[in-house]
Length: 208
Length: 239
Image (cartoon, rainbow over all chains, first blue to last red; front, side, top):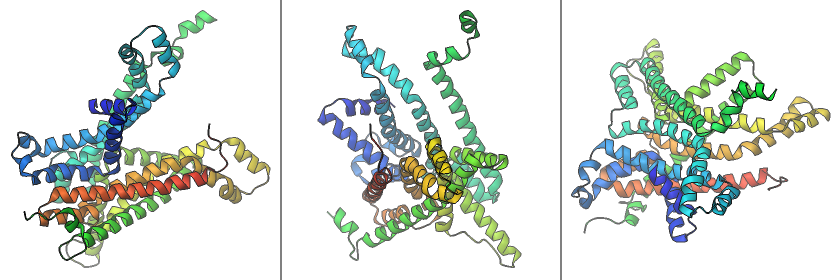
C-alpha cells in the first residue's frame, strides 16, 4: 500500500524519469496473471545462485513470504491506479484555495489533497481488498496450507466435495462480509458530511 | 557456460520449447474464449433475470452473483473439477464401470471460468442496461416497435455501448484466470511452462516468457476492445 502511494505520486510528479518506470511497473504487473508472478518469485528466483546465497534466501525459500511478496507487489500496481484516480479527482479549486491560504506544497498535500483523495478512493480500494482476500487462495498452489489448500487436501482425502466446498466458500464469504462492513464504517467516518443530513431530525424540527 | 540463452529456449528446433509454448498459448486462448462465451450467455440471462425477472428469478440471480463474486476462482475450479469427476464417477458406477472417471481438465476449466465470469458479466450488463435512458426506450415504443425489434435495434446496441468497457475488464480477468486452470491438468500455457521449467531447471526464464506471452495477449485484446468501443460509440459526444 505504501508502494502504491509512492507509485501513484511518481506517475503524477510530472517528471518523465519518475513517471515512466511507474507506468511500466503498473502495466507489467496488471497485465500478467498473479499465478505467473507467484511462480516467478517462488520457483524462479531460486534459479540464481546469487539469490540462493544471499541474506534474503531464508525468506524467499518460504512459500509464505513468497506469497506475501507477490501479493504485495501485485496489489501495489492495482492500488497505485486507484490512488492516482483519487488524487486526480481532487478539485483544482480546492488546491488553489489552499495555496491562496498560504499553505506550502507539502502542507497542502497532507491536509487537503490526501484526505480528499482517500475519501474518493476508498470504495475502489475496498474492491481491491476483497480481491486480495480471494487472491490468497492462490498461495495454496505453492504448498501454503490456507483455506483453499486445506479444502483441496480434504477433498482429495475424503471425496466429500460438496461439504468441504461449502464450508470453504462460506469462510471466504464471511471474511469478505466482515471486511465490507469495516470498510463501510470507515467510509461513513470519513464522510461526516454525508451522514449528518440524513439522520438528524433535530435540525429538521429546527427548520420547521 | 552451458546455460542456453533465451532465444534457444523459445526456438522451434529440437531443443527449443517454442512449439510447446505456442500450443499452450492456443489452449489458453481457447479456454479463455470459451469460458468468456459461457459467461456471456450466463450474463445475459442473469442480467435479464435481475432487471425484469420475477421474484424467484431475481433472488436466484442475486444469490448466484453474490456467491460467485465472493469466493475465490480457484475454489470454483476445484469444485467443478472434483465435484464433476465425483458426479461422473457415480454415473459411471451406475452403468457398471469401475473406479474414478475424471472430467477433462479443459472442460472443467472452461466451465469454471464461464461460471465465475458469468457472475461478473451479469453485473456489467445490468449496469449497462440501467444506463440506457428511459426516454430512448419510450421513443422506440412510441414509434410502435414490437418487442423484439426494440430489443434488437435499441436495447442491445445501447446496452453494449455502455457495458463494453466493463466487459473488456472482465475479459482481462478471464484471461488471467485461465492460468489457474492449469491445476486441473489442462495443458495450457501455464502448465506447459511448468513442464518446461521443470525439465530444464530454468524456472525464472520460462515464467518470464509466460508472463510476456500473457502480456502480449492482453495487449492485443485491449486493442480489439478499444476499437470496438470506438465503433459502438459512434455519434456520441465527448465532453
